[in-house]
Amino acid sequence: MTSFVTKKRQGGVALLEALIAVVLLALGLLGTIGLQARAYSALSDSGMRAEATIAADKLVGIMSNDEARLADYEVALDGEPPDLLEPWATETAASIPGARFAVTVTPQSLRSRVDITIVWRRKANEPESTHTITSYVTTPKP
Image (tube, rainbow, N blue to C red):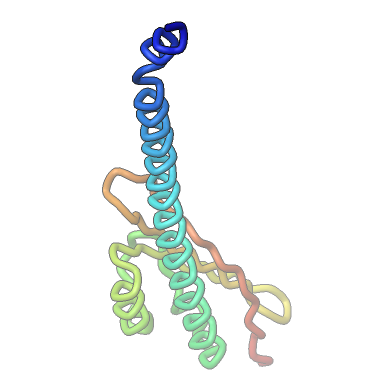
């Protein structure tokens, strides 16, 4: 009779263990889903940074082939881009939605320092991301 009483007291323990296992599994899955969402966000941000780097590299290439008019490429952030920058600005806006940019040219003795800053916002409620590239372009000899 003792064994009968022991079985009665332990009834439902397996069900309780199964419920605890389900709860732990659910918590683990929720954590994994949250981690995946963060990974997707980081991947999207790195993709935009790569696009900004490619766009800046293209502009440095364009400017390197037009050394005599380097100062004509300057534009302030949110300023109206000069005609020389219009094709590049259109292409950049297509690859980085909502992109704003600034180009600064600082003449030095044998070269010019070119700073290209591209600013964008991935989502409306997030802070802006900024990517700045600094390059040096050889100044033509007089």
